[in-house]
Every structure is written in C-alpha cells, then in structure tokens.
Image (cartoon, helix red, strand yellow):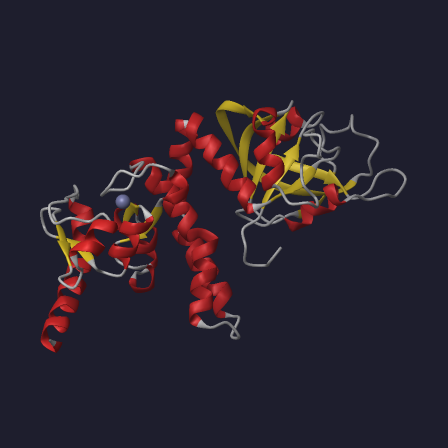
Length: 321
Ligand SMILES: [Zn+2]
C-alpha cells in the first residue's frame, strides 16, 4: 500500500458494534492473552486520516466510516470490557459513521466481490463467508463496486458523499504539499498520482449523480462513460478540477473527439465540428452537425474556454493550408 494512495478497509463488528458506534471509534488489541498478534488487528496501523472503512454487521454493509485522524495507540476503551480475551493495549481510530438507508447484503453480490477483492488480507473467503477477524483490506476495485451499490440504493448517503467530494479541495492541497516534498517525481507523475487519488473516480461519481448517459448519443453503460473535463485537468486549478460544472459525461467516441478538440459547442450548445473531419469519419464516430446539448450558465463559462481553443486550432489549420 503506497504512501500516497487512499486506502479502503472493511471491519466486521460483532460484539463491539454498539459500543464502538456510540463512541465513534474502531479499536483492536495489539495481542491476545497468549501474546499472539494477527494482521486483522495490526492493519489498524495502516489507517490514515481520510481512509474509508466499510462497516459490516450481521452479514451486511451497514455504514461507511471515514477515518477522522491517523491510527493511535490506545488502551481498550471502557465499554469493551466484555472482550477480556484480549490485552488492554491496542490501536484506535476515530471514525465518522455514515449509515446506509438500505444495508447491502454481501451474499447477494458474492460472485462479484470474490472477483474484485485481492487474494491476501481480503474480507471474504472462497466459500463467500466473512473471514474470522476484525479488519480486512479492500481493493480499489471492490471499493468502487461497493460505492456503486451504495449509490443505487442510498440517495441520501450519495448526496452526502457528493458534498464531501467537493470538500476534497483541501485534500488536493494536502496531497500536493506531500508530493512537492518528493523531488524525484516529475510534474506529470505528480499529476497522475493526484488524479488517481481523488480525481477521476470522485469526479465521475459526482457527474453520474447529475447525468446518467453520454451527453451526445445516450450511451448509458456506466462502464464506458468517461468524465471528461471541459477545461482540461492539466490547465485547470484545483477548484476547477473538482467542479462538476467543468465535466461532461461522454462515451469513448465522443470523449476522444471532445478531448482532442475535434468538436466543441457554441453559445447555444450546438456542436461545432472541425473541418478536417471527413464524412466517413463523422459517420463512424457518430457525430453530425445538427447535434446539440444543453449547457447551464456555469458550464457555459468552461465551454467558452474550450471553444476558444477549438477556434484557435481551426484558424491555425486554415492558415497553414
Ligand atoms: Zn456518445
């Protein structure tokens, strides 16, 4: 697990559920009474501020926890005395609980879950049952899958996380500071890290709550949709990078055309097509001059930037001819 990557975990709370919930924390012992230790306890020391922990109870995903700070050493909190099989010394993470309106039963999705989880330190065993233990690691793919399920059935929670995505601006600044101290990384590498850590997934998630298909052609399969920045990531400041108004959800064809500025949109949302595209290309890439999209005022501001570049490019081409 890299230093800069946001990590995901899954916690099985059984006996400790009520108490930990009340106290807003997770706690695991360092050792049992025989002095043994286990990765599902020591993994507590991997949790950093901002990490996400999927909270499981009774075979269901019941809430999503956000770590409010890095892990700390901490004695067993009062209230957990019934768990006296364990040593007192332990690790504690303060968390914020966001409850699902509709808990998700893992069993219903086990086939997908088993494919998406990593081989090691994963929450479920091959027969689809939860592994014995406390804290397990969740791969990015599994995390995305669980978030997709949550989004389908939990509109209130979805909005909440959307709001938190907007608050990620702070996080971007934090990551940038972190990365700036690493002088061996090239600028483009840093950008890739930031982008993968908070960029595309959060941005797409936020966009999907607004629109569910390609703006131009209506392709709906989320697996193919791309959250395209109107003003590109590389040219945007942090505010603009995370602003959903700076996004268009597009299918791969239309994203390629838009991203490389073979198309843009005028003031009224009517498509503008680069003159150098021939009729056959236009047909096969499914673009025609009478297509149009709706743009609200805030999107129009970003589109003005895109159009200016498009026109400038068009002009340069015609001067060369
Ligand atoms: Zn499309």
